[in-house]
Amino acid sequence: KGTFSERKPIVFELEGFDVSPGQGPLLFFLALFVYMVVLLGNGVVICVIMTDRSLHRPMFVMICHLVVCDLLGATAVLPSLMMHFLMGQKKIGYLPAIAQGFCIHTYGAAIQTILAVMAYDRYVAVCEPLRYHSIMTSARLHSCCAVAWIVALLLIAVLFSFHMNVPLCGSFLQHVYCSNRIIMNMACTPTPVRMFIIIAFSYIRILAAVLKHGRTDSSIRTKAFQTCASHLVVYVLYEIAMLIIVVSYRFPSITKNMTKFLSILYIIVPPAINPIIYGLVSKDLHSSIIKRFSTRTVHKN
Image 1 (cartoon, rainbow, N blue to C red):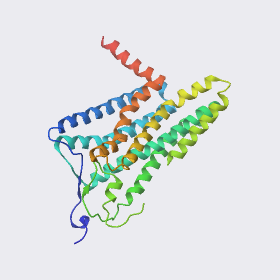
Image 2: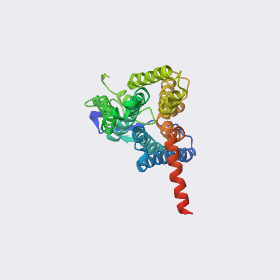
Image 3: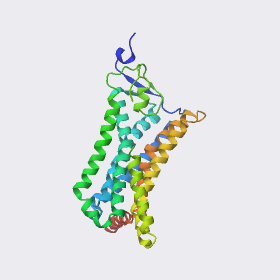
Image 4: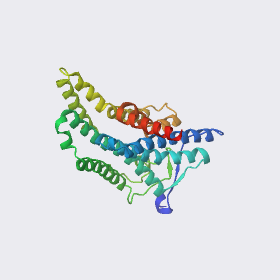
């Protein structure tokens, strides 16, 4: 009889959410609202950083890369989710499915690599303050950011290369979006199959330096907190979201809708909350945003 992929062009059908009649439009507007918050919040952050020359510093350049990553993840999921809620659209072609999965996995990998670069930058800033500007030059900064993206893209490219010439024995994806694991679960034959250590090592070294020198100078502790707070909060937020996904799969009693909802939290919650974290924790960015909006208000009046 042959496999499914040998018989005809692949068109997947996503299981999606089990939506009661009449709830689709409400869920569509909720998803639209979240997407608008993500676009507006991250758009403001990246525009302010790009237009304010005083923010053209390593920390804010890397925040811009993190913003791009957040927009990639949210855009890969939320528009298709809105179409699902509004029109009940569940079918997706093979190439769009691979593209969506590739973007989502790239988002997850790039978050880790970019945060690893940010952790290294903060390590140098706290532990080698006198040599910081000679170490984190503009060329090295952009090289580190480029490497972060290249590593993430290569990792995901290798991961998705397992799809090549793999026959599939089905077209029904039991999820709300496409991912490598969901697609490979339908493979007819067995297939082969963390930046965490780098990030943890950098912050452990920072903590050790703070404890060593902060006993005699409280300003060191304050500087370290102001320097690392936003990065740590963002990193912890991502890890908590990922942990929720892992834990949810360990409890079969949780409803399918709840499991699916928890699985998209790490894609929609951090991108929506991160701009608030940057604005609240980073005094320079907060002041620049207030200044921009205050200036525009004065000009209008």
